[in-house]
Amino acid sequence: MARIAVIDYDKCNPDKCGHFLCERVCPVNRMGGEAIIIDEENYKPIIQEASCTGCGICVHKCPFNAITIVNLPEQLEEDCVHRYGINSFVLYRLPVVKEGMVVGVLGPNGTGKTTAVKILSGQLLPNLCSDNDSWDAVIKAFRGNELQNYFEKLKNREIKPVVKPQYVDLIPKAVKGKVRDLLKKADESGKFEEIVKELELENVLDRDIEQLSGGELQRVAIAAALLRDAHFYFFDEPSSYLDIRQRLRIAKTIRKLAESGKNVLTVEHDLAILDYISDIIHIVYGKPGVYGVFSHPKGTRNGINEFLEGYLHDENIRFRPFEIRFTKRSERKSQEGEILVQYPKLVKDYGTFRLEAEGGELYVGEVVGVVGPNGIGKTTFVKMLAGVEKPTEGEVNWSLTVSYKPQYIKTDYEGTVYDLLSKIDAGKLMSNFYKSELLNPLGIPDLYDRQVNELSGGELQRVAITACLLRDADIYLLDEPSAHLDVEQRLAVSKAIRSLMAKNEKTALIVEHDVMMVDYLSDRLIVFEGEPGRHGRALPPMGMREGMNRFLSGVGITFRRDPDTGRPRANKEGSVKDREQKEIGEYYYV
Ligand code: ADP
Ligand code: ADP
Ligand code: SF4
Ligand code: SF4
Image (cartoon, rainbow, N blue to C red; front, side, top):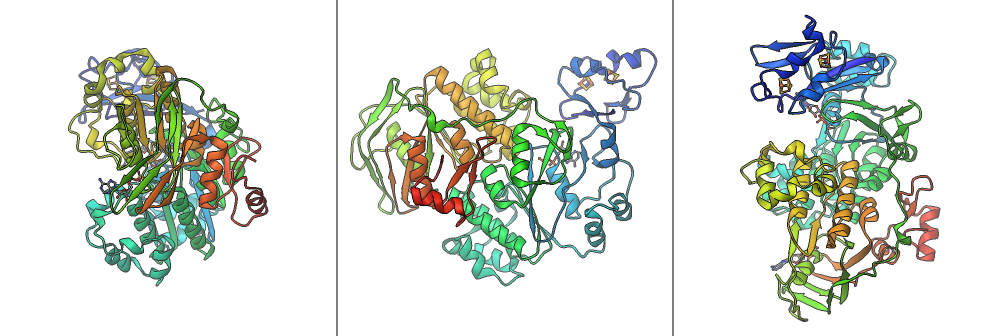
């Protein structure tokens, strides 16, 4: 076994642990050895992996959980690609890049996907986990591997990379001006008209970047990447903030790019979209912030199934102790409990936008998925239910409190995560119930000491979801809780919402575009139809099967269930299955 020791120096605080507690308790040190030494200059401990026996005592004793020690198979050592420094994150292996193919990457946040992309785009020279400082050595290390040729070209500057970043919300801070000018400048391929049309950007061309919504920013960023004339294209989470129709549209456009002979790599956590977009996939496994390993390339269907299974067949590696399975929620009985609210037909007319919501009822303890395009009136509907917005027609003569997590989260809070959450409900942070149902599964205690305005998008999302669920309310409305979360986090959030609603006897409405997550978390569905920004119609809450059929027939996409895992898979348009299902009107659950 090879041993790696990683210290999270952001958490390590030698003064507060009683002066280098780890060094004092280490049995090797106590016997006069030097498994842990003190870096006097930086005032930090260093674990010398060669002397450490892996006993784990320091790991348990450190009050700030700053130390991780893992034992890895010896043979991984020769595949070590990059280590950021002593006791830092280690990356093993890289994904392949293939001309004419979309290579998908699937794995938790913090396991080195961005690091791999930085290497493949030439921004980071991998040190091969020693002191390497030349591309020649990298080429040598990858001799006989598909990447050898690629690295030769990269060294000779024959590869031009383009990256669509993960956090599109940050773009307005870096880029100013009109969308048209930005895209014109990016247009090296002469495909401006075509791409603008495919991504439906006609109406935003004359807007300022800073006026765009997240979904618009996402499409502009994807368009800017597609317009470049490059060799290697990387799309980091292209689906966030897009509704399902837009997700499939960008997936098709990205596929077309690969089919024209380009190398395309994409990280995507919406499994239905990853499945649809990729020719092959890599699973990345490991321990976030500690190490990451790229699996061998796999066929898309098998790869995703192995990921859900938590077991890599070729490599004979179990990377998760449990399997993720999808129950057939269509078979779930719709709720027949206590009614929270029975609402009549409600209309809201803003002049430019009109929403008609048909009457219905919501039950206590249920989770209702809300599906439909962006800008169709979903938020308006809930505001009327809550009595915040007065309907133009119909009457709301009750008052329900709503706790709301918006789709786009602002970060102007000054203070730590703990400050923010304890102001909402300090008692719940201490309660075992909330710890086991919400806080621990979402990894919140690890974030307590962090400044809210320094969190990454995924961390902020988890904090915002937690804040929403800690508030006392009758209805919880969460808009796109999946954005920037990896698959396991999405499932953890889904489970937390379901369990809190059931046990606290509350009701949740979840706006979601990730079909897998909608499937995993909803008891029933409210489907919105219409023309975004102009008029919308909300159907009464209905069972999953009826709702999914209604929703997907409006979008024109059919899904089938994977026989092994039960996960939803999008059928390719015009395929035999697609045609068969459309004919019998079963867009889902056949
Ligand atoms: P992913 O894209 O899968 O979320 P990243 O490649 O961004 O993962 O990062 C993996 C880990 O590498 C991070 O958890 C972080 O701890 C570490 N890391 C990233 N950049 C640096 C750096 N410049 N110095 C030290 N550690 C880093
Ligand atoms: P969704 O939640 O489905 O994205 P919203 O309910 O937020 O949709 O908005 C639906 C439409 O109503 C949008 O076109 C939005 O611009 C418009 N709208 C929302 N609130 C107002 C308001 N207070 N005045 C005028 N128009 C509004
Ligand atoms: Fe103290 Fe933990 Fe840092 Fe060691 S790693 S010095 S035990 S805070
Ligand atoms: Fe020392 Fe054990 Fe920690 Fe290694 S794991 S540094 S031997 S206490």
